[in-house]
Amino acid sequence: MLPAMTSNSDFFDDVNHYFDMASRHTDVAPDILSQIRACNAVYRLRFPVRRDSGEIVVVEAYRAEHSHHRLPTKGGIRYALDVAQSEVMALSALMTYKCAVVDVPFGGAKGGVCVDPRTESTSFLERVTRRYTTELIRKRFIGPDVDVPAPDVGTGEREMGWIYDTYKAYGPDTLNGLACVTGKAISLHGVAGRREATGLGAVIALEQFLAEKEDVRPLGLETGLAGKRIIVPGLGKVGLHAARAAIERDAIVVGVSVSDGALYDEGGLDVEAVLLHRGETGSLRGFPEARYSADPDAILEEACDVLIPSALEHQITADNAPRIQAKVIVEAANGPVDPEADAILREMGTVVVPDVYANAGGVVVSYFEWIKNLSHVSFERMTRRYQQIANNRLLQVLTHLTGKTLPPEDAALLLQAPNEIDFVRTALENTMAISYEKIREPWKRRALPDLRTSAYVHAIESVASAYTLDGIFP
Ligand code: GLU
Image (tube, rainbow, N blue to C red; front, top):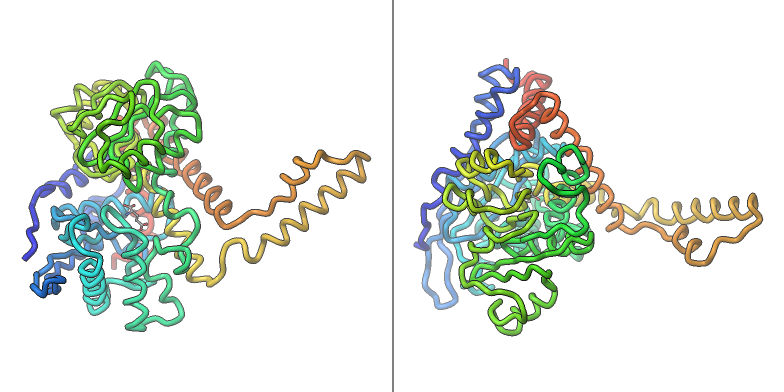
């Protein structure tokens, strides 16, 4: 059997620790709290898959559905050798709270498969994915109205495509089958902007925090992202897009890391050139002018204004928390700061923008993809041309009233019709802004200790109201 290492055995306890800290600040009845806190269902699977060599290995896998207060449940599938039950349960719980914070109508779920996608062949990974999907179908742990997976660490559009194709082959839901999984390629009915959504969402979350003078000034920082020195530990699927979005907004990325090394340059790194260098040489080592370290964790302690940990959980612990120099930590990964570190950072006055809000961009855009698949129409199809016509009319009226003609570049701007990506990005921005207000408001008004507690309070109250209103308890 492929080895399943049991690190992260306490990750679910960590999430419940945050839950318990927050629940004290709510009026939710203890019986409802204990129902929300519990992980409703965990499906643990072991199935045989043939390697290319002919050898048969037994693969261990999980799907946890934390909360069914809204259906379908929703959450990614992680491929990594150290996937463990507690980790998958923790991540499914985070999905429940995350969906509640950004107000998308899902319960939380998460899957994990103990395989190493970096060393296994594509054909082996395809067989694993198809078999895993088949097992989920057999037990009704997948379906557009049941449980909808998405990418996570070690998976992406390719795996989502295999999942969709397997689901379709079994044909349990021919009309809505497309919505059985999100994070698909555009050519397989995915939605524009899903790939960058988590990283972009994390930067939008940071922008929300940095907009409030009253919160930012005590840290010795000015408002706004421009000029902020940022370190992105974990320049992967999420981190890369976070770095790009930060640079687009005039922040300076001074440090990055990947699994085998880190780079720091206080003058700012050209992230695209770093990627190119790594692609050509296989490593970050030797990138001109920047300081290289073979220890990726060292980057966490370098000088910067903002850290955006974007890869795995438990990056910041009691061991390194006292040496963190960043004033703000944006949890683009799930659970990068453990509870001990969280307490130390709070004492130090460091602000943590918590995962249940900061990395919710992925599931927000997954929600848009799910809607698009269920409605069988793309976002711009019904409105694009109409908007163009409406804008053109506006231009004509303006010209008629003022007797002036707009300069061609202004007219072109006005006549530009929105594409799907424009709808997705603006809707993501809008969701992140509204949700930030919802978590900042109790933080300030009820004098809660930090943004994480406040986000959990908001999530708990929102899930509790679903139970109460739906009359789920007899
Ligand atoms: N795996 C991502 C997360 O942790 C995305 C989940 C989804 O899109 O359903 O939020």
